Length: 248
Length: 318
Image 1 (cartoon, rainbow over the protein chains, first blue to last red):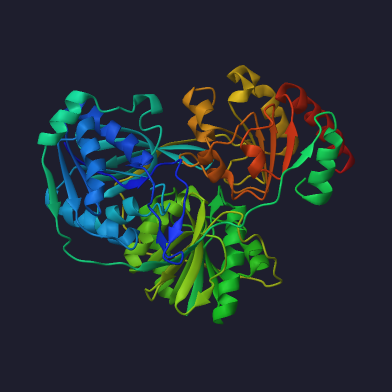
Image 2 (image 1 turned 45 degrees about the vertical axis):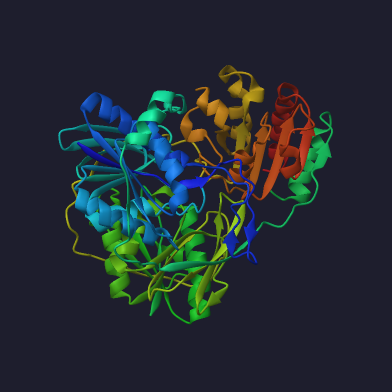
């Protein structure tokens, strides 16, 4: 089984979000970058396929040379080879198109991406990629088993879950549940050393396509101070929620 | 030209998010001077859509179970039939599953998590949340057909006096090699996505055995229950209840956080909620800075009192 894991290089979840150039660009000053958490669950699930079902894993990221540290980390965790598409992307469509160009040539059985990246939260790349590849697609995926060319996947839905049967080639939008938080791997020294020798191929984009453009950013208005209610005066809390906030 | 809205249903009943998407669609239809068509699947009574500004309903009865590719294909054919320029969907799990596939099918630009009606029609510009509600981004869509995903509980419901004509729509649909084996869904529980009120608890509750009072409080309020990341990682509560940056987003009218200190990731994930109440023993907990109302106190004393008082309040205001 040939697996491609799509890796997005994103600001750490604790990052303070600021903008520069008149609020038109994300300000990456002082920001720590990590593997997008949803992608990391997918990478770990791919490692299990490698260890138990003899799969091979390529990881791919679309972006500038700064994303290579994140790809090296994925190699240190255990991916076999890395690909970086050297492009800056205005939207999710552009990312999906670059990924599709590579995925078509590599004839992968399974492509795993995170259900969304935690920076722009678009949640569109896996679905667009599946549509471009004419592959099956399951998003919000919290469990995946593959036997031969048949896959059984569980998808989180609003208020429950849905079990699906589908066929390879398949694109997955993964999230926590695919593996648990405690299953995530921290690269060890041996992994880091081996990662240095693994191939990281940089390729130029075949085409550029986009449909949307981020024009400017804005931070939410700062909010008023909290109104404190004494613990022995719960009637007042109910009064405020009913008469002032009008939410009960 | 027309505006098309996908109005989602569950077991033949339209969801609240469907009426919100319809209300939003009506606003765009008014500003562009075009009619609003809704597409539904297996909805027995579509008349309510007229009350939210829909002029015409295309109802599909030829599809049994949810399938993102088949739904996307049907919506695509409806868009072509109606000569649609703008398609509106909600932010439900199913809508977010369908929209990217639909976008490729129609060569349309797609922007999700939109919180307001377009700020400009030419160039078509919408305001969406990014960085898990830590910021907004004004985004232009340059394609002839545009797809907008409206954030739940952001635009609200706008009632209208119109009446909708319903037409049975029979698109020609391909087979899919993806099929549903089973659906596991609690019928009596309010979901986090649809809830008006969410009651959420964290590690301050000390153990999973103490969740009974959280569920009782949720019952009294007709609320959904949720939890912080550590609680889901510890296995005290199911992952499906984890709200925050790497869990589910919450955009409810009232969010009550009990024994949750308020890590930046948690605050981001719930910040789209309109009113936030925090109950915590630690007056220095960061959540107090992000909340509207706060009680510094022990959850084990405050919550039972709150349940009793709310019962009385509900009985008096029923």
